[in-house]
Length: 500
Image (cartoon, rainbow, N blue to C red; front, top):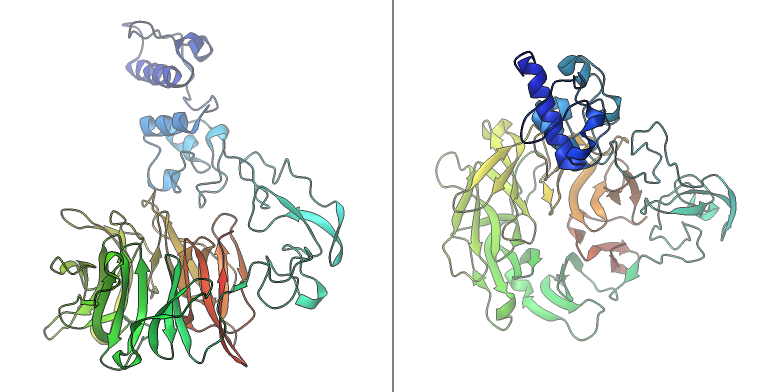
């Protein structure tokens, strides 16, 4: 072994480890090295350890970790395949079988399954191979062609126009069925995904799914109704209490009882002062418990057994602060972050909390999206966010999303190193994004009206959910689907779109 260079021995040892992990020592002949009882023979191994194709994602990750290539911009999306040119610089040789063709998408890489979406998902130079596209077929709207199904990347549909069928009555190419009284996807059914769950009443807004109920404002009172409208409404807070901004989770429901005027400045925390009250699921017959010490601001969040909210700290600066407390009121309020507002969290006590962190003087504040990890102590994760004025964030078990300028931005929670990346590229003005089973649901305010729109995270496509005008406080999204209120000529109507 004395005549074997140290670098060559280290390289051979790495190849032994990778081979033993994936195929065992019996296959080492093809690597030009051997491993027996821990020794290494120099005869000689390949100069480029990434010359052979990876046999599994686990092996690819182990190889990049061993070579120090799975970091930062070398593997920007964290999928264990590197951007073009990395191997030439780091190893002195190309590695086309380990090269990622799209470093902005962790689901696009060698070894990935090919989906029907117009992209080269497995980086083999082809798109949508394995799917028969472009054949002539028939729909309820007439002749069409076979194309990828919007909303199901493993299927194809017969479509009269690109973007998954829009008949002449819809006035253009529209992805998925829109709630507008037309057969947009030309499958012979009208508004099949749009269930009207309750009859119109004079005032209805702020709907949220709460178990088998829908909690919302009717005639300025906060009520709970069975999802399908059976039985009378149960009053949670009378109109004279001025209820506002209900939030729901498995542990109960929380809301504000306003004590002053409500404002939501475009570049600042929501400022709707009120008493924060909550009612635990196990205490449905008890009076609501006041939860905040002083006034809360904006919409609360129910996450696991806790309620989260923000308020202004006392003093000359009056900086916002995010708080947490058990929804039963059994614990004291605990501060989670200072100079922060607009908390968002999934309905799970262990889930991280997203907030907006503020800096600068009140007249010229700037914000960034910050991630808090709850535990015995609260840790903060700063994301490499683009500059600007982000909207209040939304978060679920997999994604953190916010609106910024003319686009939606996102961070996958399983890999925070890359910071935020732009989800949408179409010209739009997204507002009030919310994550749910349909992906990201938001209002597109680029036109005169606000169009309720969804962005499918699986296929990277946007489509409107309804052609009617929807107000910012009149929609919600979650695991059980999307709820929204349409303001029609005969009064408001509540709609529910079930998960796909």
